[in-house]
Length: 436
Ligand code: GTR
Image (tube, rainbow, N blue to C red; front, side, top):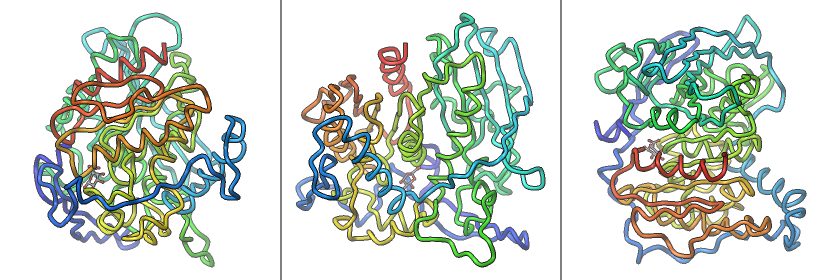
C-alpha cells in the first residue's frame, strides 16, 4: 500500500461534525515494510493455541452435512462475528436512488464503456452519495461477470483516465495532501494496483468505489458516513455490538451490488468482491453477510481479515483495536490479549464464504499480516468446503509464487504488502475457472 511506502505514520484526522472543528491525532499506523517492533515474527515462538471447531455447534452437535451447516452452524457463526467482531449492520432498508453522473462510450482507448453513477442513499434531507466507477468491455451484449472493489484514495487514483470524477468527501492527508481534499495531480497514483486493462481484455467489468464515500476512515464517534444515516435516538446509546467501519464499508458494497444487479450489462450472479488490506478484511466480511457475492478475494488482509488471531503473529487484536478503534465493534476489545476467549477465529470467516470460491493471497515480506496465519485460516476452513464436496487442494503452505486454485485459492508471492499484476493474474485465472 502506498501509505506504507511513504511513511511510518499516518496522521488521523478527527472531525468534530457538530462544530466543524478539525483536529488531528496520531493513529500510529505503521508501514508494512518496517515491521513494528515488539511484535512476534518468529514462528518458533508462536504459542500453543486451539481453534474453535467450525463443525461443532454451540450445543455440541457435530455438523456432518451441508444442510446442518447451512441451517444451523453457519447462522450461529455469522451471529458470533456480528456480535463479537465486526458489529451488526442495520437490517432496515433506506431509500436508494441512482443518478448517472457521466458516461463515455470510448474509454480506455476505445475498448470499454465508462459509467460513473452516484448511488444516493437516505432521505433527501440527509443523503450519502457513493460514487461508483464502472468500466465495461465492449465485447458482447451478454451480461458480464464483474469485479467489485473498494479503493483507498479516490476513483481517480485507479487509472489516469482524465474523465474520472474526483471524490468530494474526506481523503487522508498523505503524499502532500494537507486539506483532506482529493487532487487532480493524483490521477492514476495507484494504477499499479488495478489491472483494469487485463480485466477488460479478459471480458470482465471493473467497478470501484472510494471507501471514504461510504465511511471516512477515522474515529469520529460514528457521526459521519454511512453510520450517520442510521442516527441513534436521544435515549439510545451505541451498543457494544453496533457496527464499526469495516461493517459499514461492507454494507456499502452490498448497496453497490444492488445497483450492479440492476444494470443490464452486468450479471449480478457473477460478481466477485475484492479488497486489499483493511479492504481485504472488508471483502471477507461483505462475502459473509451478503451471499449474493459469487466470489470473495482477500489480498493481504492480515489481522481481523484472513489471519488467525490466536497465533498473535505480527499485528494483534489489541494492537488493531488500539490503532483503529472504529474498525470493529466494541465487543471485539474484550479479546485484546485474550484471543483464546473469542468464540470465533478467522478460519470461520473464510468458511462463511462456503461453498462459493474464495481466494486468500499473502505476500512473503508482509509479516505484519502473518502470511502463514492467512494460509492456516484457509486450511482450517476447508472442512466446511468438504461438506459441499469441494476442496482446497493444499495441505502445506505452497511455495512462493506457486498458486493453488481449487474452490479455495491461495498464493504467497514474493514482495511486500501491496496488490500487484501477479496477484491480479491469479484472481483472473481463478475467476475464469469459476465465473465463466
Ligand atoms: C495497517 C493495519 C493493517 C492493515 C493496513 C491497511 O496499518 O495495521 O491491519 O489493514 O493498515 O489497511 O493498509
